[in-house]
Length: 375
Image (cartoon, rainbow, N blue to C red):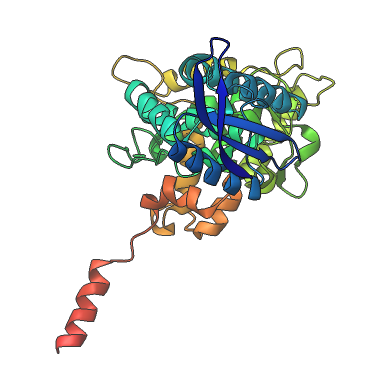
């Protein structure tokens, strides 16, 4: 690599001079770039030498735009078999936020300050959770384009300010509400089995919709999560490796499922909770089927609408596993709760439900310890 002065004359005889950086990239290809000032050429020379050494240099002549890199990233994600919903989200991030703001830049011209400016702009115009998702997509496409270094130190942290903790009676059905809903559902074989399964096993809605009879062992009292149905009603693998799990079935759920199995519509997919023709039930349809049950049980909001979404029953399962036995719960350790919920890490479980675990600052124990200390 070298920095040298170049002199020449124009067709009109006018003398000109500039500074050039002459170098070979990591692929062995030669490049020459021109600068008006020596200090700019030397700064570029130093940067290129470092980037070539680390194998991350992209010459301007070889560089594609961020928009082109995004398109290649989307095509790769599709080829890798990413779920349809995930691909739709990626495309939305690129189309609405990444391409309009920085899509025109060549990767060779994309710098950390430009990525920081992009981050600041989306934070100013989007909700923080959405901005974090868009930033994650940008970093993923830059990584695929082998240009991740420009965004390595640019991120959007998760803000805890204003985050609302889940509350029983608002986000999580109270035990009394669960009892009323299940009591009302006893006259409906499908809803009785469904409510007991989601409440006592904590399945995600997609797992519930994709559940097969082959994965329900009524003899040993176990339910295995092996597949799920996505928002487009496509059967696929569970959300993550940790989502593949075995959950014990309480006797009440076993009994309800045995009754329901006799009446369950048959289909090629062998689903436990299918439509009347044995096909996959849409999430909206499953939720709508719960509405009259909640209404009959008086589990409604101030407007008379169903008080809880389907996912709230999974929240109840988590709280039931966590609560003390004295309060009607199972008092399970956090690691066991993580496994039953299919969370990828204990951090996820504690972030979501940590405030529900029994506190260790029992007042009676504190008073006794204080008396013993000061006696």
